[in-house]
Amino acid sequence: MPRKHRAKLSTFGPKLFEFWRRALAHRTTAPCPSYKAAVRLRFRLYELRAVMREEEHPNAEGANRITLRIITNADGTASVIGEPVDAEFDGPLTEAGITVPDAPPLDEALFTIAEEDIKSKRPTDD
Image (cartoon, rainbow, N blue to C red):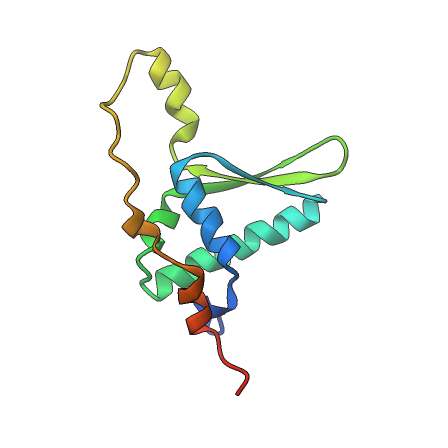
């Protein structure tokens, strides 16, 4: 059952949308000062994806194809990593001789969110 009081798209910063867009193309790492900060970032990214799904946003399809995980470092810092869902299998499949023709360029229509679009959806201070 979906949450009843979920945030609106206009409450998310443009950098969160950009993280999803970049992670769709390749592994994207966001360093965080602590594990707790990484968990909060991952939660916010998950929340954005859920709102995109609920609002049937065109970028939801791309975000659905990304997996997120957290890695921790010995110095207490952590990172949120976003990458295409099956990226972990690329190496073994390539070693097995499985290849595909060059992929077409990333469909920019999948992630067409522009900062102006986000700002236009934010409430004004009138």
